[in-house]
Amino acid sequence: MTIPEVQEEIVQEFAMFDDWAQKYEYLIECGKHLGNIDPRYKSQEFLVRGCQSQVWLYASYIDGKVNYQVDSDAIIVKGLAALVMRVYNHRSPDEILDHPPTFIEKIGMQAHLSPTRSNGLLSMVKHVQSFALAFKTKYSQP
Image (cartoon, rainbow, N blue to C red; front, side):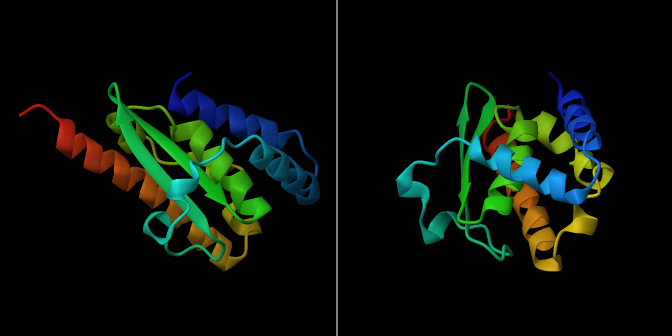
């Protein structure tokens, strides 16, 4: 599936719920399916700054794809991270950089998060994009 297709799928999933209590429950459920981060990346070096909760994000570059590992100590944030990973994990740097996270606005997520959580979500996305740009720069052919 392409990034736009995955984002549209997320929008459709959130549209199935009548209220934000149900959407938050779904978000928490998404977080439960987030893969585990290697414990060595749960350190200050990999903390995402700007998040109210602790969020650790690590990226590697394998076979032209950016592979992320992420975790959080907060269940809502873990769900947000799961959505971001669903869109951007195992993608090429160009795919990541060419597709902003439109699903966030389309599902109304920012309007229903506290300002600090909203800032944290944006910070997480910026980190994902920064890793993609760094890998693109490092591994692009001259």
